[in-house]
Image (cartoon, rainbow, N blue to C red; front, side, top):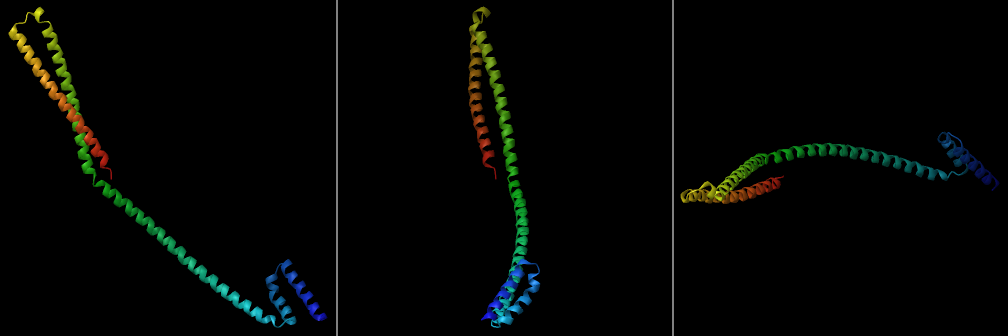
Length: 191
């Protein structure tokens, strides 16, 4: 009983030294030998520990191998993803360019319609100016001593101008509507 207590004290002291001082792993086999001198049945537990360490090392190697394989797969997939993104962007540009001829045609139509609208505005301004001058002339008919025939001619011209003005105003409304429709066409052609 006394030797068993002494053995436990020596064993405890050796274990404490191992943990307190460096080089514990070098003295590990010495410690094991000391333990086995006092308790040979402990060999079975040490063997089990060695087996578990081997299994653990094997498991770690398997884990590292699988992790490296997955890391390689991730790198490969990232490269494929980047390549796929580049291909997609190129296809997207190509597809969007297919609508460009239609867009340019509609943009030319818009330019033409705006030109017509401006021209129509100039025509309306000229008609209004001419009508104003004829109205001023008719208002001075007595000063100018206009004959009935001359007065009828100026009234006919004024009527003709007013008819042209009505048609030009109708045309202006149509052109304005055409411009709005063309703008909408351009807006909906976005791809």
